[in-house]
Length: 113
Image (cartoon, rainbow, N blue to C red):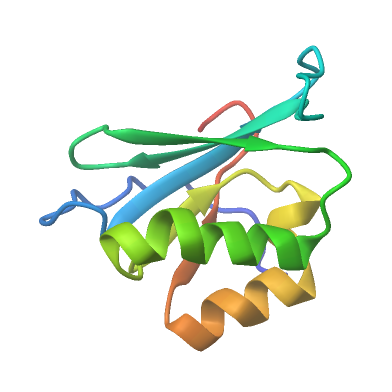
């Protein structure tokens, strides 16, 4: 792991859906279909967003499947993804999946999203 350093600003995107951010909203009341959280994926240039209903019981391969269906299918493969250090985004599977697509993962710092 790299030593802590100065905060670095994110580059300004030049094309829509090349650089995205993502996070989860969890702890929501369960719906009739069993969803209890929302995966929020935001384009950093246009600020347009996808709100993907989720179940907290999903495993990482399901996130990859939904990512392909809901984001890549509609917008192409992003160049970079900024997310928090949620275990779903730091897993070996997720890193390998994104690496295979050529997407660079960037983790935000606590209290400095």
